Image (cartoon, rainbow, N blue to C red):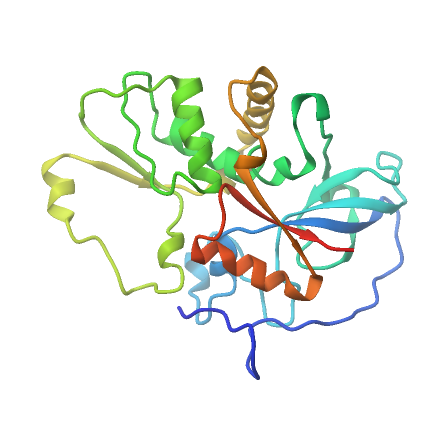
Length: 279
């Protein structure tokens, strides 16, 4: 899997202008404000992919690049969504989009609690849910456990650290039967097949449990809804911090969106990497 090509004659992405359809019943027109940058997007555009092994459909050639986004409703044919409402949805890399009311989730920032719109695609969105899912649900962490986090400066890893320390109460303790959970491998997404586990025998003799997971399984099962509310509660109580240090927001011209996304694979961010579309 090679790096996406951003310049030259054979670029991975192209910029197109299209006419959007008129609004139908229970539809809204939204303007995208922030894009979520996620390692999973790299797999969605992988060439020669084995579709049977993917957890979600790939992005086909000619389709809008899939991405989660925070957007503002600019026109509405839905009683439940008013002009100016901020919503979360999978709008993709597009300036404007038409979506059904069931395809968006209204969000409500809370300045008094330091909760900004961007947090709903960061600490209170996919990364926060992945951290909760992996640490508490899959790894079954307890206060007697010692927790080691790979990529602790990233969007998910930084939330794992906070949950382990301030919510679960994990402390430095004795190493016992290890449990390893894996949700990604961002450092190798552009070099799949070149590296692998070199100390497999250590896993055997130490009786280490290794389990991969994908947070969308928890979302589809209905588990994630209560977790979001718990994360919001922890943030409002000050038990987890979601300040500016938990996200890197990059003001970006729309035509440069892929360049900001590529920062993910070069360690160019602290916490969640977000693209802010410049007017």
